[in-house]
Amino acid sequence: MSNAASKTFTLTDNQSGESFDLPVFDGSVGPSVIDVRRLYGDTGHFTYDPGFTSTGSCDSAITFIDGDEGILLHRGYAIDDLAERADFLEVAYLLLNGELPTAAQKATFDHDVTYHTMLHEQLSNFYRGFRRDAHPMAIMCGVVGALSAFYHDSLDIYDPHQRMVASFRLVAKMPTIAAMAYKYSIGQPFNYPQNDLSYAENFLHMMFSVPSETYVMNPVLSKAMDRIFILHADHEQNASTSTVRLAGSSGANPFACIAAGIASLWGPAHGGANEAVLNMLTEIGHKDRIAEYIKKARDKDDPFRLFGFGHRVYKNYDPRAKVMQETCHEVLAELGVEDPLLDLAMELEKLALEDEYFVSRKLYPNVDFYSGIILKAMGFPVSMFTVLFAVARTVGWVAQWKEMIEDPGQKIGRPRQLYTGPDARPYIPIDQR
Image (tube, rainbow, N blue to C red; front, side):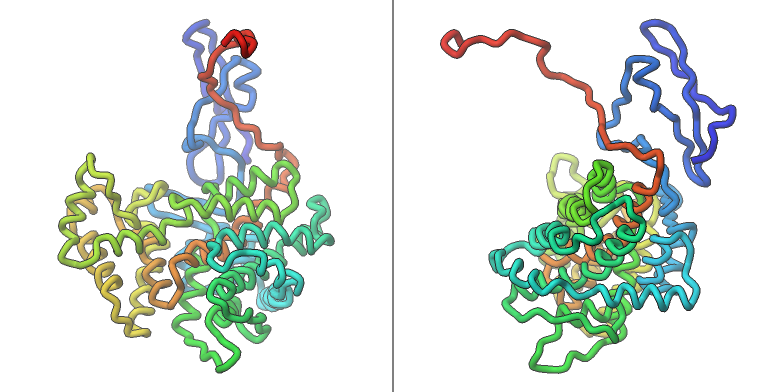
């Protein structure tokens, strides 16, 4: 955080008429922030900001978003540039370390992640404690939280070496955990990771290969999977990242913090949005009914919502969606998929990009709209969509957790409230009520 210099914000108490000067801090780019840390002590007032939409909870050097301009930067690098030119582990190194790796650093990092991909064999028995029809996100929450019971040598958050080992383990093991959750749900044997495959290739292998035949890797699909991971790797202080930071502020171990992030991501308003897109398309059912549902979406009194359009942060085209759109068409062309739902989605995309109602309100298709279509075409069940989001976002969560732990000014999170309940009142014995 830069110095406040001579910039201040003057606040006047309407009741007393007294004025208070609050420091103003400038970031390297983006809006300035008003430092309200002494507000309660000086004025006796809290700020009120449900959803924290106008509150900066931390200073961070990892990700910058300008929603009005449609900009997303990781450590200063544009997301579309990274998605086109880097692979996921290169972006992971960037998020964790602040700079792009040299060739030697990249080789070492890839090796260290690759050789942490196996799970403790006893965890296979842990999976068998779940019902076969358990949602994969429920399994992910449980297994990731349980890692702290297996890897005692990386729980000391104040030891830099242990933090590093925990970081590698989480990034490396998450695809294995996710693939095992899927295999368990369909009654197939678990696949062990293969060290000669890339991060994305290894995940596809563990998801879709079976012992009875050789799995043939499709380079178009593995590239698409790698891009999906990059595009979901981090997104600043969203709900799940804030959850990870809040859990971590108490000193909780990293595995517990990431499990908390997974639980937050599971919500349909966050990581479940691409699943909601396919459910919406299923409800529409046919291209002939698009106009009917567009009319419903325009009706303020109709509860129907068009999922996959617009974004809470982006008031312009989501920069991730541009790359995801290209990837979507590449995957569909490669697979030659004939699916009425995918045809419906493409028609809805075409209409949205031409319709004045969408364009004037900047309701462009977002990353969730395209990712659901891609994943369905690649053979992923809808229940796995949010799981894949968690696999990708793990590196962002870890980078944010690591940054918070290493910040000497960090404190345990303790939001305030506007109390609206009854004032103090006497207890009345039960026989008198």
